[in-house]
Length: 184
Image (cartoon, rainbow, N blue to C red; front, side, top):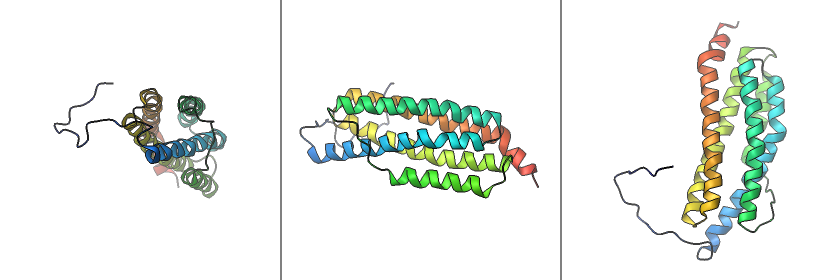
């Protein structure tokens, strides 16, 4: 991916290394472990959203993203290998909260309605935005630490998360929001 020229030079143009920045490296590894838990948790949680959804397009999008999420887990395992670390998950309180909120939306909305589907989209987009922020920040940090292979893996996932978010927006804008508006 070509780097965009922003018209301003960065304040710090040099990269650091993992050896030169032990505290930053520890934070990076801790954040990877957090994200590893989050992705594994989503592999368990997304089937509930698929079964709760009514829209065929929404079911298809979440099913497709479930398969991508399994790939995200595998990529994070590769990141651990590149870091010479064992793949260990650290509980992600944020993802746990987001998935609990999604379950609450399903419980509070009527089965088979477009309104429930809208709620599932909203909850799913909150998850996507959390992942976009996490992968985006970690991608930049990997670059800073000179972890180019790790950065490449994180960037692949970041791009997929952005695409998933756009797909959810498209489904909402072109279909279920209007159906939900017509429900009594």
